[in-house]
Amino acid sequence: MSKNRIESLSDGIFSIVITLMVFNFKIPTDGKLSTSFYAMLFAYFTSFVLVTSFWISHHHEINALRRVDSTILWVNNLTLLPITLLPFTTGFHGTFPNSKEAALFYSGNYLLITIGLYTLGNFVSKRSDVEHDAYASHINHVRTTMMVLCIILIILAYFIPASTSFSILLATVFWVFFVTFTRKKNNISL
Image (cartoon, rainbow, N blue to C red; front, side, top):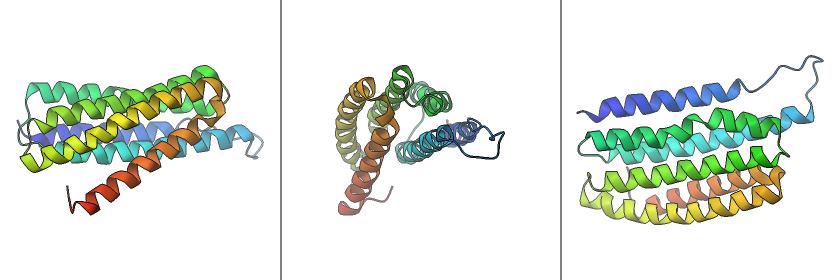
């Protein structure tokens, strides 16, 4: 099977997720932007950066595939599952930024997506060339660190729910800069 099909499905899901997230915004009835609008805007911005980061990571993983089999199809779709929840968790947290439940769902979803990409990375590395396998091993080591960071974010979300969007944004920015630096340092163009 061609990897074009898996790329098309995944790209479609990522674009739909980004589109659905913007539907969480409500047009103010009085023409003024409230504090709740800014909370939703920040949650949306954080999730947009998150989806973009995950889409790029997903692209690099799928790009390295030499062959697609039914196992990869299932792992890919299970990786996409928590990504499809982002419009809900973003809207929930953006609407109720001080809610413990909303913050836990939002940060828990981040953990599930990270676990999904870690799992996809493991399966792809077994179906790619040796050069990518070494790089994927290194990236998955960093993803393990990110999973630990996600658990810390979940604990933080429990005690300080309003900090969740900012904490997740910082973790995502850390990931983006770390991966970009690693690729440049090792002269890897995926």
